[in-house]
Image (cartoon, rainbow, N blue to C red; front, side, top):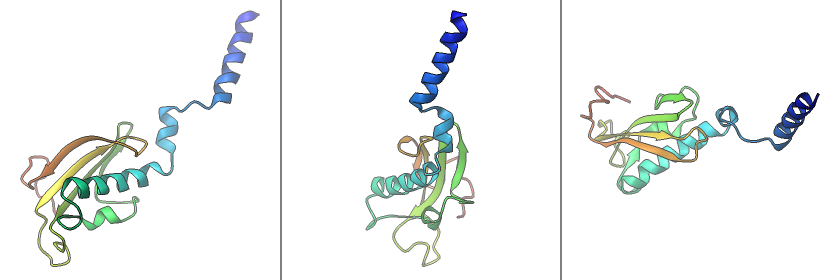
Length: 129
């Protein structure tokens, strides 16, 4: 009789505390937008600011069907996007570099800079965005 009572008490307490779980982090509706903004702003910062660098237009779009979102799973988000000197896309010139960043599932932390530099990186053949 004591075990069911302890189990019931534990279940009630855990639901009352609303402890964050990985599932809740994945269902946070703001996480994808935060992740996109963080990735874009990080790329701008690590490449010398807006006076030196502009990420591809995809990083200014919404997250739905965004071609720069390469992966989204329990480990977070991976953004893979082109960049270059200010005006590169407007003038029709190709990007001069690519940035690939992994962002935490909650969209609040860059967990890995996979690549930031030349388009000749093995993970980026034929990138045309």
